[in-house]
Amino acid sequence: MNAFHVEDLIRHEFSRNIGLISNDNQVKIFNTRVAVAGVGGVGGIHLLTLARLGVGKFTIADMDVYERANISRQFGARQSTLGSHKAQVLDGLLKDINPSIETRIFPKGVNRENIGEFLADADFYVDGMDFFEIELRRELFKKAREMGIYALTAAPLGFGSTLQVFSPQGMSFDEYFGITEEMPYLEKIAAFAAGLAPRPYHLKYLDLSKVSLENKSGPAVAPACTLAASLIATSVVKLVAGVHVKPVPFYTQIDLYRSKFRNGYLAWGGKNPLQRLKRTIILKKFKAALAIK
Image (cartoon, rainbow, N blue to C red; front, side):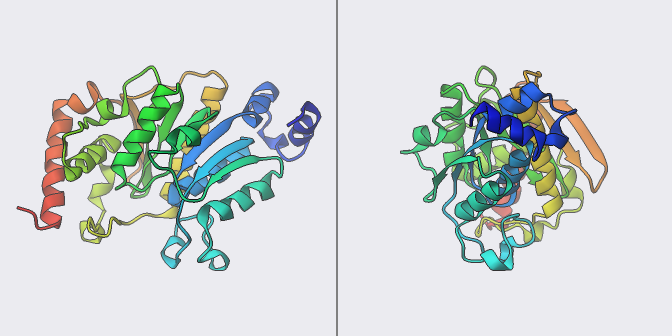
């Protein structure tokens, strides 16, 4: 993107960003590449929010198409896009916002073989993967760390969200969540759940009978996705501007339904004794749900 075109965009499409974002930082944002794996509920709104802030380069990976159940919370889902490929729909929406946006699409998704290619030239990795996809998520965070890339995740929980930022020089994904290679799948998922929500505010009003481990599905609403996108996008802007963002074991947790807000610090990450206890309780609930004794 040449300097003249950037200045034209700042004068017109992105003029209202200026005053909250400096002219120089807006230019940096135009030249930033964000890689997003999974562009459904949170991933799709991450893309659109970052595009409206002026991010000029995206790498997008998703293999799914839109279904009717996506309408309630996925921002590329509408009656006219049912059956359409998510990554391609969002690619069109991004370029409708800013025709100068550069995109790389991985229409068959990301896997262990193409992770390096997927993260190539990325300044940030943003996690949009399904909650239950733990192994590939671990690989992505590990590779981002190896490549010196900040990795961010914001989980929609109830009518709220959490934010965890992983610095390539800080605590790793497995350290923060307390996950080890030899753990069985359910225990890894339990550890992930405990680390995402150190204070599980949403459990006060969540109907657990609507969570299906067999189908890998659970309740999710649009306000939580938009809140998650706000947390991610603001963190990206701050990092581009050189503003310090506290990485894990620091976390942010918000629940709008219960009017709760917490900027916390999870000492020792997944080794925290209270986190170990939470993981054990969550694992028991998972096993009970699956009738495993």
